[in-house]
Image (cartoon, rainbow, N blue to C red):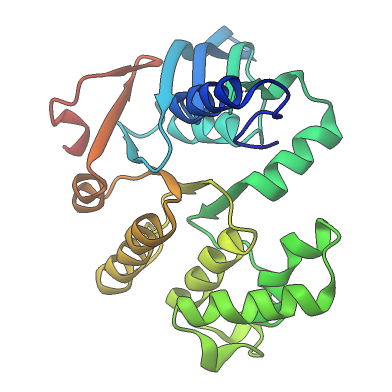
Length: 253
């Protein structure tokens, strides 16, 4: 997948095509629906939801517990499939891809940060960060160098070879952020990234994500109950009754 189309026409045609591609939303979601079959019938979590995400945006997804915020994020990250509707990434319908295509998309174009870091505790910090690149068949030497560089950016150059299980909670979350960024994905998805941390460490992780957005232009979508973090992200969308509604502040109650 590439931001720019193949250059097959005249220079003027190519410039117009590239400009059109750059103006197109990074993500466009049309009529997204997710339903589950329960013992009491069909449970609709997302109901013909529409959404657009521009390159470089920082967006907070908020709402009351249990409304489907994580479900939405998992579908956006292709970790779950919708019942119906389309998720367009750079103009491509991602769920038209086969399983191997979806796996490649997740590994190379999306970064994930979760409330619980999901590191391999017996591996070192640098080994955990190398994993996405090794899955993508990059060389071990290349990924070691890249992982050391990104761990330095998140302030862990002194903890490269420390096993993840021996790191503090804040350090483990920094390793998770570094792992999400190691292949320089255009989109990072974070699900309650500060929810398991004390307020001071949580604020540090928030600022780290903001700095990544400023310096790299990485698009951020963050599910959070943290009102301060949501406000600093800038754009807040509230999930209610399966759709995004205007923010009236009720989600923070």
